[in-house]
Amino acid sequence: MNKLDELKIWNKAIDLTVAVYKATASFPLDERFGLTNQSRRAAVSIPSNIAEGAGRNSMKEFNNFLGIANGSSYELQTQLLLANKLEMLDLDLLNPLLAKIDELQKMTYGFQQMLSKKINNKNI
Image (cartoon, rainbow, N blue to C red; front, top):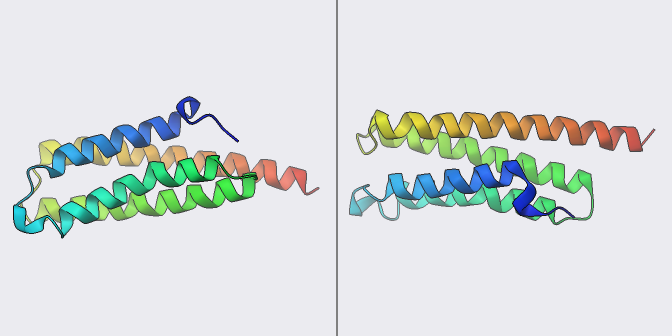
């Protein structure tokens, strides 16, 4: 079991989620159940899956939940790019969000690689 507040990746995911909520607050009201909701749900899914994985009993399970979190980050990336193309999200808001997502994706991938090595070493 891990302490969430000590996991840099979880803290970064929380910060991203807050930023997504702020950025989507200006989306049109008719998108409340569309891109606004979808983007927020994908954003919330990232730290939630990191947290769930951290609370599991094995590194293998944690690694699996990191993969789910990473999938949600790609979903969020797609939704934000769509919002920009639909002129709901300006580039000055989009680019910092994409940079945060990219950093989180790299961190997740690195964390997964580290866990995979530990898992494989235990199985030898």
